Structures are given as structure tokens and as C-alpha cells.
Image (cartoon, rainbow, N blue to C red):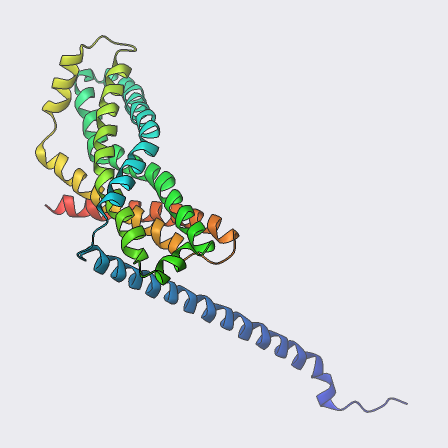
Length: 282
């Protein structure tokens, strides 16, 4: 004898599957909403920190000694790496470009082409990316360790403005020193290009530099220098922000340094893109 099965019983497994799918959709929606809220909270904290830093930068009590010390630290730490990188940039560009110009009989255009490439794009961008890895990570780790060991809290308790002493000095030092490092890297890049041109050729020092600078205009030099100030400000501010807002655990120091390098490198590329578009419109 076959027992009668109510129709509703047949749909119980299907109802359970629908319930599971609805639960997964609700969990996914909650996670997406949580991530979006964290993102907007991070953006708001970023701009609030920017406002506090800007306001502290125009205050009367400027920490000149700390600013000069940070300028020395930034230049001293990155100078050897910038020196090696600048020479290698010139060597690589010259060695890679020379065979193509030889085929067209335009070897005389090599100094001007390499110098223009280094001054307008290669020198500022590569130097800024190196400084983002060296300076940004150092600032993030240093301020992050001060945050973990509660040194920043102790400064606030002792009526010392940590934004003015720690952040403003580092941001301004990075803003002022990066153009100097870029000019230094450009000079070494052109010098390395001369050395690369003499590997398979014979060009005098005076002739090479006269050909290099004869094709460079003032408008090629000015935008490249101006955007380096924005590169330095972005690197210094992001490094200080990530370190200043680090968590309480020791792992947050490494996370602050890592995120400072990633975000500052991304901002350097974005700023360079905007600067190129503005330069093309002028």
C-alpha cells in the first residue's frame, strides 16, 4: 500500500536550497556593505589627516631643526641608490636605442633623445618610485613603531603637537628633497648615457653634452621639475599617514610600511598621468 505524501513535503528540499541561497546572498551583501563602509571611512580619515597636516604646516611654531634633520636623512639614505639607478638608466636607454638609430643613420640624435627621455619621464618617475620604496616605507615603519610604543600618545599628553613635529617636517622634507634627487639622477643618467655611447662608439664629453642639451627646451625641463614636488608630497604624506594611523599590534608596523609603498607608488603613477595630460594641453 502506497502512503500518501503531501505535496508540500516534496518541495521541502527545494525550499531549503532557496533558503541557503538567500543566506549566501545576504552574507555577501553584508560583506560588500562592510567593505564599502571601511573604504569610505578610510577615505574620510585620509582627508581629515590631510586637513590637519595642512593646518599644522601653516602654524607659527615650525620645527626647523627637525625639518633640516629629515632633509639630511632623506638625502643621505637615498643618495647611493639614486646614484646607481641614474647611471643604469642612462646606460640602458643608450644601449637599447643605439642599434635602431644606427640602422636609420641617425646616431647623432641619440644624445638628445636619451636626455629628453630622462629629463621628462624616466628620471622623475623612476626616482620617485625608488623614493616611494625607500622613504615611504621608512616613514611608515618609523611612525608605526612610535604609534605601537605609544610615543605619539605621550607627545599628545605633554602638549606637543605630533602632527607638526612628526608629519609636517617629514612631508615638507620629502617635498623639497625629491626635486634635488631627481636633478641629481638626471645628471648621472646623462653621464651614464655618454658612457654607454662610448661602448661601441667614440664621442667626446663636450660633443655629447652639447648635442644632448641642444634638443632640450625650457618647457621640457619645467613641467618635469614641478611634478616632482607633487611626487615628494604624495610620498611623504602617505608614508606619514600609514604610520600615524597604524594599529596597536606589532604586525601593524609591517602592514603600515607595506601599504605606504604600494599607495605612494600608485599615487606617483597617477600624478604623472595627470601631469602628462596637463603638459600636452599647454
